[in-house]
Amino acid sequence: MVNKPIPVPPAPAPAPTGILKLKGEKLIDKNGNQIILKGAAVGGWMNMENFITGYPGHETGMREALLEVLGQEKYDFFFDRFLEYFFDDKDAEFFASLGLNCLRVPFNYHHFEDDMNPGVFKERGFQWLDRIINICGKHGIYTILDLHAAPGGQSTGWHCDSGLTRALFWEHVDFQNRAIKLWEALAERYKHNTWVAGYNPLNEPADSKKAQRLLAWYDRVNKAILDIDPDHIQFYDGNTYAADFSDFMGRPPMPNSVYAIHDYSGFGFPASPELYTASADQKSVLEKTFLRKIAYNEEIKGHIWNGEFGPVYAREWADGPQWEEINKARYMVLRDQLTIYDAKEISWSIWLYKDIGFQGMVYASPDSPYVKKLQPFIEKKKELAADAWGVDLSAVKDTFQPLEDWLVKNGPAIKKKYPPTWNPARHLGRPVRNILLAECLYPEYAEYFTDLSEAELEAFAASFKFENCVQRQGLNTVLREHAAIKH
Image (cartoon, rainbow, N blue to C red; front, side, top):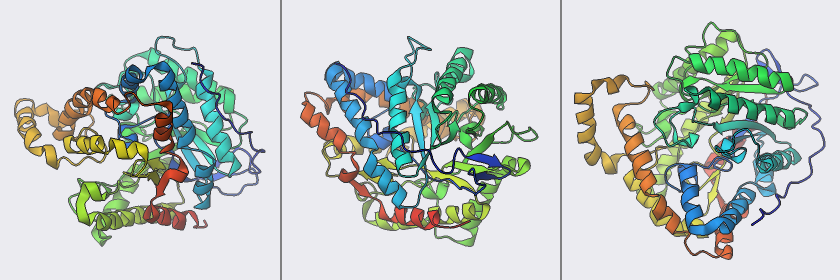
């Protein structure tokens, strides 16, 4: 089957503000006016994630399972429709109506090249980026292009689509070279595009060698991009999932670069030891955590971009009758974080715009064909703690606690295993539940697609259309309030 042509809207007229520039701690337009980027990441679009759309494990494994049950023609049909419907003109119109001006666009390298044919780029991946950039530009929204899954995996997270417990990106220079070649192609394509705010070369890297390999690669990719596109800003995440800049201290900033933190608060997750009440002590924790993460930005006196943050939200089926009270507390967490950011005049991008009801500003309706049919599987994943993000471990604690105790007793070095922010339970859960168990769930997920007609696949994909989604009013109210603040 020949893939359906991608409906790419015409490129909008050049933005009157021109390509954004860095001036000390500020981003400015061509007239010298300060621009603060406020927005969200689009979600599991060109880099699908398990908790965002409901599948288990990693994107490549899920796609292989669906290809087996659908066949090539129906497989191509479904994913083309999914990519088309996940973000369209109505999404951009709504996004802009909240006063938000920037969409972070995570993408997976698999859209641009195949592992068995490296370096040969696929035009279709670039066309999908063209489409979302043009749609956003039409509504006055900048985009930041984010390599979320790099060859070999830049961390051991599921979002790298590697399915491994080692970040091979740092161990094989070929993976690093391929990522640079991709950025050279992207820089060549978008170097004159005024609606691209900039490039985020690598999401949440995790280099266990004290960022030595990370910093060396950053120097290489920064120069490679500058040689082609000296104008667009480059946004660089800190080490250990964009939370650690300790190995950057004392090092001069790279040219034309902003350094990006990710500032998730534990108060916004099921594992929080207490409900957030906006007490003085709790607010102090938020501020101290933020200040620790921006120490390098303060040292170099550079602009700050918080590329990811935000709570996960309770759902009635998952969290019981108290779900609304829990969410009110989590909206307070977000509001208090944004108040801290407003005082520092930083740019920010919450995680995320659209999903199936866990974190999104809008989400596929529980009554939509896709979510309604997949709901039993989504509930099973929760009970098994098969996903890592925002997981509630209470249902599996009795199973895993004895094994965790055994590991700590016989291999106490697990307490110091990289990354240092992970406890033994997380080190155990990653290979056992999030990889091994999740991979064993691929066939069960794929069964939901077995024998579906094109019309039924169309309905599955259309479940993610804006008009078929629910708006998370409490979250969007907070975002609208802070988007409107003038600096």
